[in-house]
Image (cartoon, rainbow, N blue to C red; front, side, top):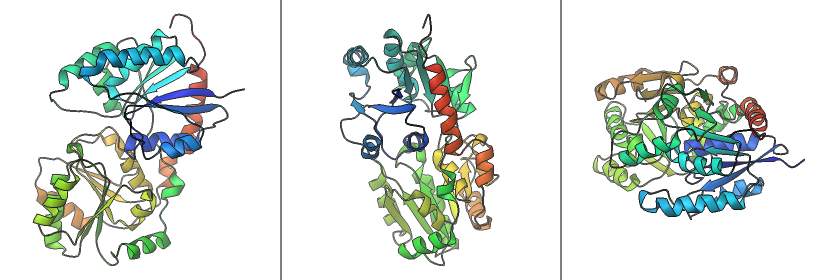
Length: 369
């Protein structure tokens, strides 16, 4: 029997939280039963494209979803589903923009159409009217509603929809603390015998690097040997690099770029700092807890993120002094959190089995869809 082909709809398969979550599931899922393919909305190749193709997945490219090209995009979706009738499941991860692909999938008889919310807020900006239009189109096109947290579900779908919370699971074994790995990485980065604060995230407004650097500057004034590891890339990186240089912190802040060895780098950290303006349920905070780290985060992040009791929340309106005090006084000892993560559904092996069964059960043709 051929595996059921599931179309995962994303922007681009780079190393972001959503994309990492998808790859965690893809590696663990039974690919004799379920095979992932990906519809992406960028011409350039993503960081995970090679691995996707090595696992048997196909990548289909579409143009970016922008108001100016709606008509062209809708026609391309219709052409796509008229030519690719093998899909029984379409899983949309583009928040409200998933509505367009799910509408086309419904038109061409795809029985399982999942809208998946990965954020809990986007604020108000110039794109708001188009997001409201997309939410209107969303109505009646999905057959199931998924979210990374209860808050993310309410934000996108409202109170009236029944939402399945799918954990942003990680491979717990990969992140289990190892003193040997910690020592190796700290020597490689020349950060032995220092307080090492870590952060992983795209350099964009959401991640709030401006405040992150201000907090670290105040920490550095109290502990001059403190080190900040910044992992990731993005359009604001050069701006943050200039700020770090201006503040005289260049020797204490390490820009490591996009990395494949996240689990190992987390072993080298002492604390994880994450003052985001908004999130859904960040995969990186699950990873940090899997590595046994204590995390100091903004309270704009849902309390559902605290799986292990190792997350402290601070209001973004509170003083920088409070952030600094938490950093200075919080224990840097790692803990074994693997059993807590498994029992709460945050291990990919367990959840990949659940997702396999879900796709199989809901891929059956239904009358009246």
